[in-house]
Length: 171
Image 1 (cartoon, rainbow, N blue to C red):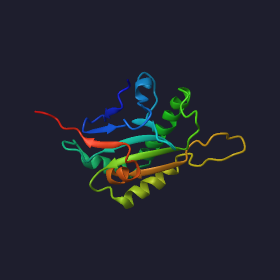
Image 2 (spheres, rainbow, N blue to C red):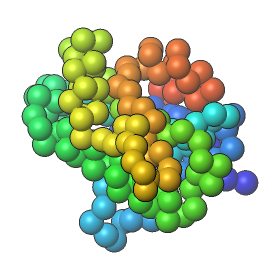
Image 3 (tube, helix red, strand yellow):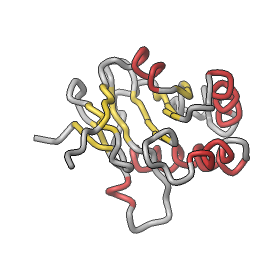
């Protein structure tokens, strides 16, 4: 049986996808090529979620303000967008989304100074880099339905079926 409880790369939070059919970590497939990837891809009853998690508010973060500075630069927007494009390529290569559900990309970002207003600005600036609701005569699939930037509270309100809890370390 596939493990659906995963710990993010900083080993501070546990993501529990047990209530869902699957969870993918694309980085296991692309470790030897120059592709970027989102942290997790999963499917709810009505959509596919691409999830990128950034947390500068963790205990022991070496430079928590670096994340805040990064969010003000075009390179950050492009890197977050590229993670989606490269992950989508690999997801489709693995025959992902055969049901053709809407795809939603969520940037889950935690930092004490990144408030709702700044998250909306990030959503707009990164969203301009993404093919949200791209339409055209020859485009047969919707490439991306929506892009959202959430903090943990907003995440819990929108995706209660995916639990995110702190990892408790024993000394």
